[in-house]
Length: 507
Ligand code: UN1
Image (cartoon, rainbow, N blue to C red; front, side, top):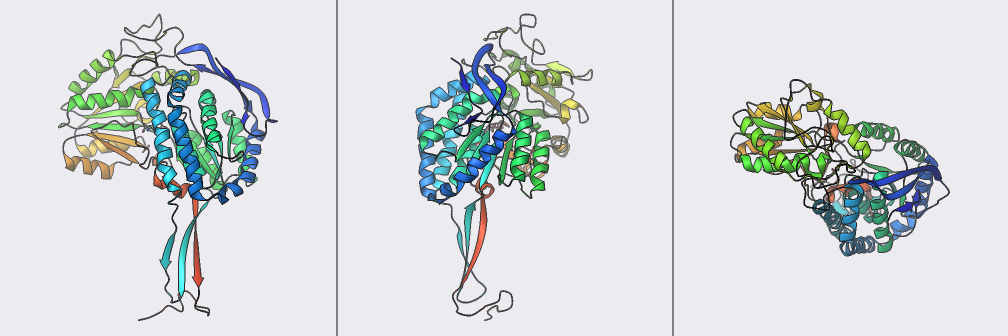
């Protein structure tokens, strides 16, 4: 049964715009999951004002008590885990097993941060002068505006929302409209867990209105930190906008994640890793494999095995046990089709009995879903990709992966860094010297050894460099520095004016 979602959840509803968005099941596109009323830019600003008004008293709640609220969220996630996972499957088409994993990632994030409520440590620091003591304190930044994609509709938003709230900030969240029902479910978990009204706000709006609303809210001094997960293009615009207000946002952007397969690698293991990295979530993770860079002595064996594995993979109905399901929604299906046009004459196709959308005219043997109503696409492996090819240089965010050979490890690393992204990466080898050379030279924020490019754990720093982000890190303890500001204090109890640098004590 579908539901209608108002444009601002839990806040002022007078900004409901006239535009509606229909969130549908990508495995059965005629099945409506939710109908969302989109706000205009004034709604975004109003939500920021509500957050600003509510933030001070939330910051006055002792941090360990805020941690208890996060613990409540975690408990509610566990109680509602299956319902939430099935909603993710229904709304964005992620296979059930992956959706359960995503819910677990949300629970893990709560488990990590609930304890931080008792650990928002400052420091006591010695002074250069006698009878003087120095201290540091962490304070919340204020209002955090969080804008997220829908490929991870519950876990990735929680990387911002959970620590931001724990640190005493108020949050305005603009989720992806095509994952609105998931967002509403997340909102309800936080509301039931005891986050006071106005401290956590959700606004549904289209990209353009969100950008204008954010511009106005920053101008009015209503936003202190922006967290954004999405494309590199939009990330650049958000970075420019925040820079005008001397703010540095958390940016988690695209990736063209490389996997280097060396001549000594276990090929079976590498192919298994490539299959999941390239095609898990239908390639729609920011950590998905972009290009497999394979030593020339094993590249033809690698392609043969990868091709066989992709042909044999079960694709289709996400409620079942499949490698991947449909594209997230129509918009992603369309951009994937554009990326397929990048395949040129110099490339060879593997991995598929067809190319493009699977349907009655373009069948795939063993598809388990409804080929007519689902946004299912053939898995495509393209060999012969080189720097300068659109396919090599750009993120594609679909079940489409390149393979290129290399001769020396240094060449492999150069190829891996060439597209200019720097999110995730992987190397398959048994040689520790290669691992550490790769680790040092690769520009990526994340390196996997003998493992998928996807699947980072919630307590490690997640984030990228270059076109993948501005060096900010989501997840784990590192994110506390995003949502708090350090304050330094000195306290002189000597009874006289001791001047720093001038009255330094000597032995
Ligand atoms: C994303 O696609 O935005 O490492 C995040 C992974 C997941 C998170 C992906 N834990 O693949």
